[in-house]
Length: 101
Image 1 (cartoon, rainbow, N blue to C red):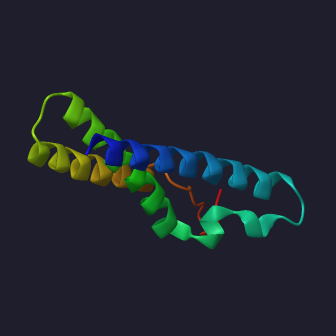
Image 2 (image 1 turned 180 degrees about the vertical axis):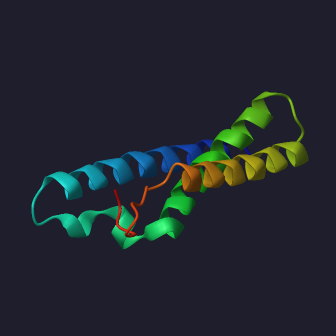
Image 3 (image 1 turned 120 degrees about the vertical axis):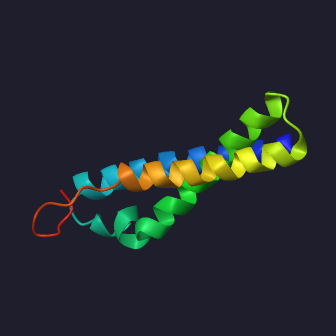
C-alpha cells in the first residue's frame, strides 16, 4: 500500500506545482487568462488535487508510523479530507463584488 500512497503523493504534489505555475502564467502573460486553473477547473479541481496529495501523505504517514492496513487507510482518508478543507480555507479570496482578488 505504501507504493499507492507514494504515487498519490507524487501526483498530488505535481498537480499543486502545475496549478501554481499555470495560475502565475495566466496572471502574468497577457492573453493567457484561459490557462488559469481556477477558471478551468474551479473548486472541484482544487479539491481533487489537494485530496490526492493528502491521501498520499496521510497514508504514508500512518503506514510508516506502524499502523495496520485499516488504520493506514483511515489515515489516508483523514489526510485527504483535511487537505480539501485546508484548500477551501486557503483558496482564492474574493473581494466584495465577487471577483477573485
